[in-house]
Image (cartoon, helix red, strand yellow):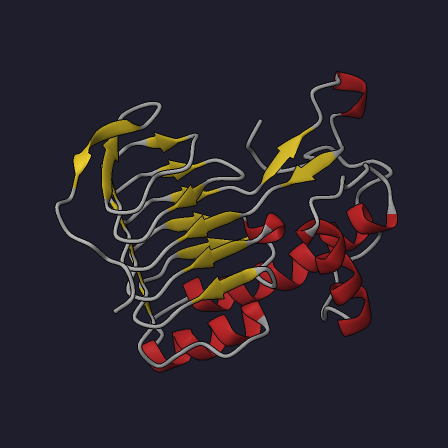
Length: 217
């Protein structure tokens, strides 16, 4: 239930790609999803979501086409997210996002090759966190009723400070990873992870504590 929303074209598909995301419409949409409200198939929010995705895909294509310096990547990420990206942030393309405007990156964040962020429902990554290559963060679920499958339910993913996600980790909607936690490679995280914990597996389970405290000093 955590894959891309609404693959079929129908009443919920945009009439034409969007070259820009209008600020008033964007804020209305962010207010809607950030309170966890249903995105009903064919509604104005559903239409906006699909249109905004075209803008994000355009920017992502620029990030992933040819070589980009770290500075150029950060500039494009700022365009994608609509907010400043700190000079300490490093992202190794290819990088994928289908929305961008609900993604917040802290300082000293490192995102390795081939990560996929479905940030429509909100993704926040805290200072000093490392995201292993090929990791997937999802924030939308589809409706269970097959007649309402175009409906989507947003739920944010929050990554704390100094978290380390190993390669190929999947995080499902609504999960919070506590400060200093480590998630083993290939894990599927379906529940919140306590601070300073090591988890792994499918689904991810507690292995042990790290033995360190990543709380802010």
